[in-house]
Image (cartoon, rainbow, N blue to C red; front, top):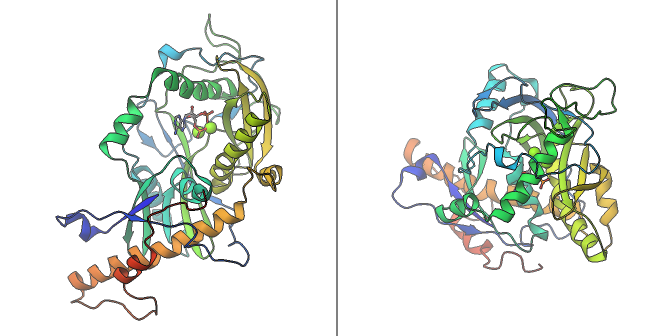
Length: 381
Ligand code: A3P
Ligand code: MG
Ligand code: MG
């Protein structure tokens, strides 16, 4: 993947920031233990309404429900209220962060080094094993804090909006599964129940038509290596009760039924994304609905997030979270030095009369750029 450094000053300059390609494994420490990852704690939550208004309530929070046997995921497809694909911006997360700061949330007392949506960090951390999908990031450094956004050019954005009908239906299957598996009201105890049909003609378990504007988001604080992180992410539902923490969070996923060992290997590779996405937000449970090509749920399986790495360890298609964490830590360290320094330099020139920080033994930003630029993003893929 590529990162584009930006700063407040740089945004106003006529030349846009040039992309810089990060090389794997150049940024990864060759040996030693994996960097520590701190258990995430929630600092604030918020909801997007059906009209896509952000509000600081839990109106979009859903509770886990049991889907009926053989749930049909194409149900309601033509009534899907689909949120158009726009550039994924940090605005919602920044509003939440500012609300938490106004309330002087104790978890923010020590400050933080980076802010991102969970999806962005998942992309960065899983990059050592990514063989197919590239990405570009915009990284901005303001007052020593890195802010990440995925960079989508016009073509990529169009591509995401104009997906072929088959893929559009497949994406819908995932949301329909969420409708069957969630309820607006908690069930008594931890065991989820099947939803009672709300309207005539609706299948058992259907909790309402899909509107992808609606999202419940959790903002957590955690730490990777020595970087304190603020991460925001959508949470599909909670099991039993909402505790105000991440311990009852549940991630819902659909996947094609496994028919042979090749399918199994493909699924186990895909588990890295499920794992990392959940791990970063402190989501302890992932419920997977295995579906037929036509979109009928055939079996369900619950995974404890922490147990997933053991399932794939040592297999030819396996993966090691430690390698992802070491790489992620390396990327953050590199960006702190490189983007951070550029920001400081420019601020130095524009606000403090040309004093730029040097002399940490690592050379200037420009030299470092030369040193660390490699054209091949994933030589080991
Ligand atoms: P599945 O993951 O069950 O396919 P999430 O699982 O992250 O909560 O996302 C919910 C659903 O959004 C996904 O359900 C999928 O249908 C859709 N979705 C998420 N990311 C997508 C992507 N990159 N491309 C297409 N659909 C996506
Ligand atoms: Mg989701
Ligand atoms: Mg999901």
